[in-house]
Length: 183
Image (cartoon, rainbow, N blue to C red; front, top):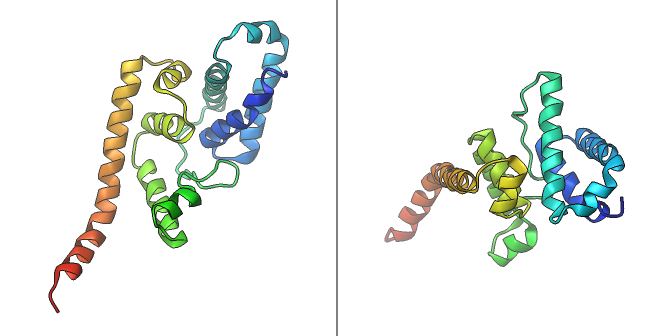
């Protein structure tokens, strides 16, 4: 299992983002590892082990919810947790001149916007933009065509931008009006 060890942290983050629950994420990764134990020789032959493991993890996640006969869509999406890591890190926020309060406000807005897009788009955004998988790797993980991944990712980003603009435009318009008013 030394082959899998370097990928455990990434696998747990993906599992956590999918399940949104620490215990279920740990169980999902443990289930994956137990299933891979007898297949060590197969693992040695895989060229891109990280994306391959994420694909197997994703399939186990889907199977888990099929067995439970429950939808994998969860309304309690949380992308700001100690385990999953925030979508906006404080170092990046400070570099952009944002305060902690502004970063938290934007984090909450991003979470609401992510809830406003379809689950299939959310999975793409989380895998590509948050976890850092390439479009090719995401296509492999989700068993989609590369063109489909790219077009859905584009639509998801456009919808997220629209949702964020809808939330922040009124505040920005007020600030612009106040800034341009002559006193």
